[in-house]
Length: 609
Image 1 (cartoon, one colour):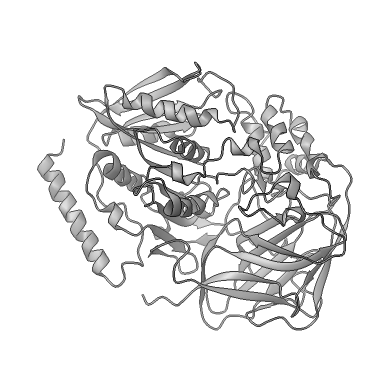
Image 2 (tube, rainbow, N blue to C red; image 1 turned 90 degrees about the vertical axis):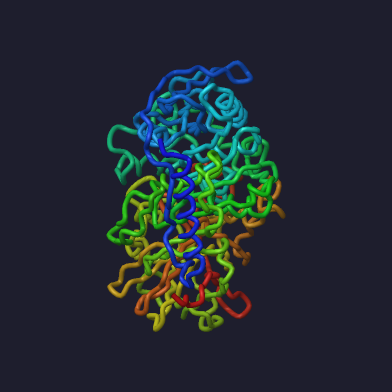
């Protein structure tokens, strides 16, 4: 074991390096380095199948990986619905145990070896997390300090637990955590059902992992396309052979804010008292959660420590920090970080009281694509952002890649609108090859038809960095009583590739949220056919991209992007998923002095490094 003196020397060296970095005028242009963290010095012993009783009598199964040594150690909890072995959690647990942590892998209720009934959204997960944290703190091998780790659904379980403020929980490290609401990302995005959630539902329907479909289902197979095309959409679970997911029926019938979603919400940030280290990627299917939670905790966290969150966003899909290359674009070796090293250093500070300087470092790190470099930032969104309107314009024929649509910071001129026809029977096909977003896919195939409007700048003479949240405000009419609007931002390369960066979507009847941004059943808008309505869409993913000279900035608008989003049938029904009739919609996007439709891009002034 390392001596106390050695630890003090290493900590002193680390602090000196931090001081030197801060003193450097280029400190903000840097990669998030793990720095000095606990090294592997213990053998590991494990014990499996501990049945821990929850407050309602249900027993959850917990596997323990701990240092094979005398003494008390801080604990790290991973509370998950996924297979401990198949998901690689045991390897990670051993890695942390070698470094002086007792790691607990617990199956959520109703999954694998835990008792109870499985439901992805139940307030039992909140109290279960609390009870597990407090149980760990009382074990003879625990020093009373507990942290939490995990990604995706394992990010949800961290936030749910933290919202209950268990006394011995000291810090969390959520990766790709979805946002609090089920209506902002999964299973719905502003009223639109997302197909990967249906895939997830089918695979998670039972106690253990289920086979989805009859073969390699997660790709763009004919069977998957047929299933996602089925109407009514509420029957898709049945035609996929799913018989034991009653909670999917609840999702279908709860499309707006209500008690169903409120019971598992965690965004009462003032109740959360622990600091958070948040990770996501620019192509993460659960992207909204991490920046939302960072901002919420920074503004409203329930303790001074909680109001010091950290946020790291890389050029990654949902499976973060695995590949430097996505869809043929190589982001360089620096795009990958020592993720577990960073988390270990985080827990060293909060659970072991190692003064390693991590809290003196920048709270935000973003990887800027196109430049392929990390930048340390003071906050999110970046304080130096210049919010810049880019207006749509055309001579009336912005349809397809061959149209005359333009994008410019100048107010619109030319014809007052563009028009297209949206037929739910033949929706615009997205280029995604799997259930999740694959990365910077080429959108040219999806924008080749007249049912897509395309607005593009001329080739840029100077580089333009766009880093931050994206939004669109546009004016539109439809011949239908409801429809969908989808807006995409792409980087057009000199060779013609149109690389997707991010998108925003909205069901037309969801255009008027309440003052808290919530969509409630009694507030769904009535869309009057032919009437011009204003729509404001916050893109559900942000971006960080340097548009290089010779590149062009492009915005695409359509009313479908199938099969990633299930199509709106345009009937005006309160619940599209119950409809079978398909109505063709004639759409108009207006761009005139009276109706200046535009996107707002977060332009970053030229950096000095």
